[in-house]
Image 1 (cartoon, rainbow, N blue to C red):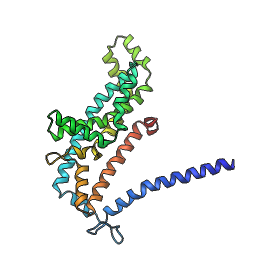
Image 2: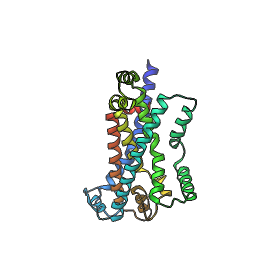
Image 3: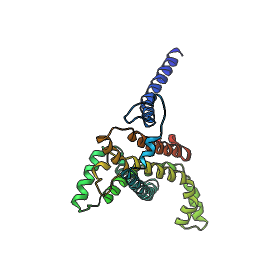
Length: 264
């Protein structure tokens, strides 16, 4: 019992240290974004929202944010459709190629984003696709597809197919049975997958940095370029807003699907 308690205490201490290691830098960024000074510093005497207000005066950030929102919406909706179809095929039609299909779809999760970005850049250039927005759409669709695929598979695995079979025996067409029986029950997985895909696309920088340009830029890449030349707290304010969007997405996923079920 003493050894077991000691192991639990050590494990608890280690988990607490890991949480602090992750959380403390984020809290520091939040604090810096509230400083009234013109340089990066902690707000010692007073708090100010001046750097949040200044974001609205920078047209390049507003334009990049609009591009990121549009791109994330297009990529997440496309990934939702393709990922759902792929998940249905993987769960219902088990063949000798099922594992190969799963591996191909989820491969962007374990391939370095730098290599993926370079590969897409080389491929699109060779195919004559010069549109920066088109390149980014292909890249972000590739990036977000695995998240939708995994969440929909999690929902379909828990679904009892006998319900759909019963509906078809009662005269419903395959499409009607899916739309009226299956779809309402897997909707939480679809919602979680779409939200996850949206935020992953919106926050991406390592993949997008190879594919953006002066005609089409995203907010994370614009922020990255800004920090290369300027060191004022506005970068921290933008980072806090993006962190807020990510935290909101995680809360939505936890609410509609559950992180344990998603990661399991």
